[in-house]
Image (cartoon, rainbow over all chains, first blue to last red; front, top):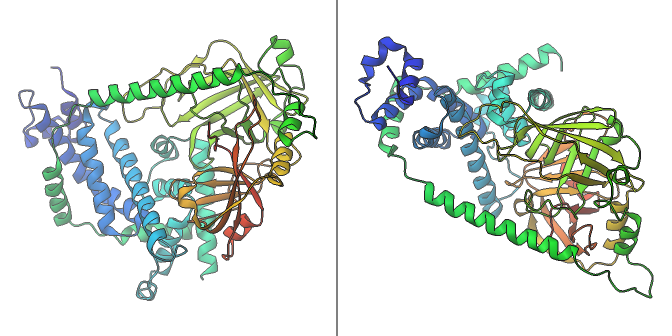
Amino acid sequence: VARTLPELALERLTGPQDRTLHSVSSTEPATESVEAVIDVLFRRHYARLLRAAYALLGAREGAEDAVQEAFVSLFRHWGKLRDPDAAEAYLRAAVLNRCRSSIRARVRERTRTIDPVLPLHAVGSDEVAGGREDAVIVGTALRLLPRRQREVVTCRYLLELTVAETADTLGISDGAVKRHTHRGLQSLHATLEVTR
Amino acid sequence: MNTPEELRVVEALKALAGDVTVTEQDIVTGGARLRANLEPPKPTRRLAVVAAAAVAVLVAGVTAAVVADRNHAAPPVDQGPPTPAEVLAATLKHDAYDGSEAKFLAGEVPTHESLAGLWLSRRGYDHADRFLTLSYNMFIERDGDWYFGHVEEPFDSGTSRLVGDTWTRRTTYASGGSCTGESYPWRASLAADGSLHLAFLGTRVAVPATPAPGPATNTCGAAFEREVWDPVGPGSPLADFWLASAADVVWQTREDWSSSDAASVYVAPGTGYVLSIFDDGSYAYYEDLVTGQLVPSCSGELLSGSVEVAQTPQVPGYFADAQVLRFSTTEAGCASAVAGQGLWVRLDSSTE
């Protein structure tokens, strides 16, 4: 039996035995099938994408918005996906794009309103006192890395992608991923050492 | 970096991720919010047609401008001392894009070492259909990796290998997507004026493109049969031209300048150091372009301070006019290193 793209995606995500749980059949409107797939993807990937977005932006509210917008974008562009397996990669790229846009907007706003040398996410004394010094320092330092290093480190250690998956997500070579990873970790470690 | 150091950073990153707790209720709430935002996709065909038409008009306009400029008569002879632009034009090889291939490729066979660095495309050939600026820059690393635009955020990038005088440039990333995965073999030569001459060697080699979101497009063609790239490092004809021109330009001061409106690649002609300013105003500063992989010497979130801006004259037939700037700041660290370079030349600042 021929499957539509969303049906195929749903099968791959949940297995044929779960199809009844989502009430997807070939007689249903395509939009509902896509919504069912998006729902499964959301449950599966929301937490990890949210953590990555938080690491990049330093604010939960902005991170939630970025992830929401990525899923809405996936839904609207579903018909352009060549393969249902590409959905996850699309979500990762979309979240990174939205975080990038958000950072740009904040930098522009900051230059108009406050001291331009302040970091995007200042470290509060209560955070440091909470016993998570390394995490707080690394979070701030991560957001001050050059953009490509920041995104590569996020992909590798927060989205837990392989070198090849990171290269696909960011559209760069495996060698570039390794180079930016090395340089990024080196910078983050140097920051930890300085503040030790 | 050794393993214990790396582990400390990785553990800190994991702890950072662990700060964000996601409960079942969060997922239910988020899912409900998402469903409320989902709407059926809207047709985009008309928008795409309008955008394609706009691009076609723009390309046609730029192409016409290039052709018109190439048909200009030679400038009248000036009785005074030669201007920096005239000196540069006299130094560069005049027939770079004309004549036989043997003449075009007369020069030395390049090596990995001689290819490494920053190059600026010389205008004069029919490349307006691909790049809508008249000059653009290419970084080449010693291992053969190359980047158009920024190293950190190139608009095209890839790998390359040099076998004899054949340099094969493979695109592993293209911002437009259409060139990804394709390889272009060129016969390469370093001309007497220091420029890199590339003559396209026939049919491009198509390989499967890396899967990426969106529809597949494999419409990338050989944009040029010949490319000419000029070095911009210290002592190069272009660097000498910029330094000499800067002595005669009219500087304008901008007190409240910030890098958020200055995204481009810049080169300091005195040293060959490079400044990349990105769209969000963040920047990366490179002092070493030739010994290994291109990594920033330092970087920052935003450059701000006082800037003097001027325009160097165009070099008819070779280069458009370029924006130059001098930056001063009271900040320490990376910004101070940038300011210390004195003159910076913006590599994409054509006003034509």
